[in-house]
Image (cartoon, rainbow, N blue to C red; front, top):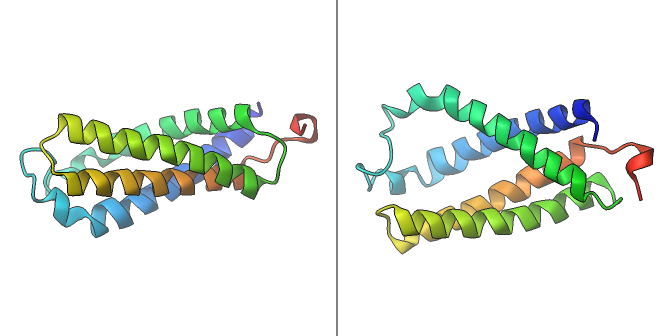
Length: 141
């Protein structure tokens, strides 16, 4: 595992995730979150927590990039990233949707929206990691 490539992939994945999060969670489905004022932070309160959220995303993306590097099977960055993103997206989408529905006071519609958004979020993250984390010749099988 090359730590420079790992950090580069994590930075790129963090940027992609933050942009995706802003567009999807912050704009596209934000009105759904507003229906649950005792469950989610208000739009006015949220920005104060963004530094901690961004730091957490970056640390998580280091782990995701490390998992990618361990599962690399020798294909192109794009194909490996999409394959990884599909698997991780399926995991994340099912996990997000079912856990949030089970523990938060939300309806099935929002749970399905979170599952779908989580799937595409990690499909994109996996693809970005695959494109940025280019294993060296010794890593290719």
